[in-house]
Length: 324
Image 1 (cartoon, rainbow, N blue to C red):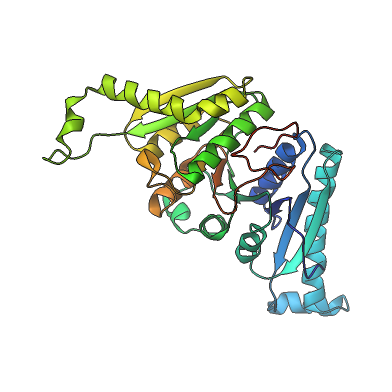
Image 2: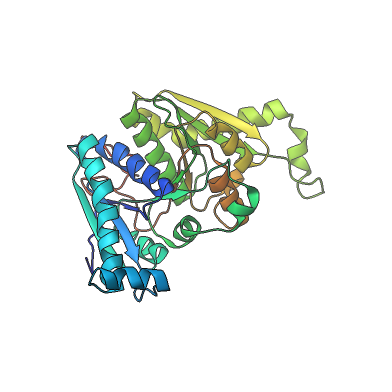
């Protein structure tokens, strides 16, 4: 068992042996291996600090001549060993590490997020019953607490090779990181990028009556112009990425969820301005993450997300690419 693990510069994905976790691990392995220089993947399994056995489990351990704690540790090592072997078989160029650590899985993943390049967690997808999704879980906690970038992989998400990357636009530091990461991902995957900006009329009163002077078409044109200005630097930096800007009237989360039906990845900032300002501040964030039909990457401007050369993604592109 590993008492400590090194997450710096790695993608860290948690597993508990479930099919949902297996899907998250294999998604992480696929996309970590796609980089020009594959990023190391750390597969993490958490076990209770003081596991309490059932009467049957205690009897099994005793019959095998070992303690219940040893049985729990051995099972955990077997779980990470089996999935690591599969990853190494399918992605032989990918550096793979494993760790079995005592503690709560959500706490360990959130802690790993301080140094990791990206955290990857599995979650119940759009097809899960509403009550089940309302119960929360590890993915909710990690998204709320972890620093850096977090990828949430729905258990029913399809593997859509060639599908576009979708990014929710805003001009906050986190939003700019999301834009940078989305362009990196689209370039790395060789797919188009759909940049969505959302808007709506506010309630009519004397203080905001001016916005009602513009038609929907005029508002869409203004929002599209602002969106193109926001992403102009990245468009120049990534000439290989075909970009479509969509100005959508309505709730931003609804626009993202609808786009996720045919997307391969959705990227959003943890806190934004404008139409996406409400994202990841509570119930709205959970709605997007739980209802998305494809994996979602959430970015945070905590020290800035960097590529493998250590350069901030808000800076210029280098030969070594990174992405989701």
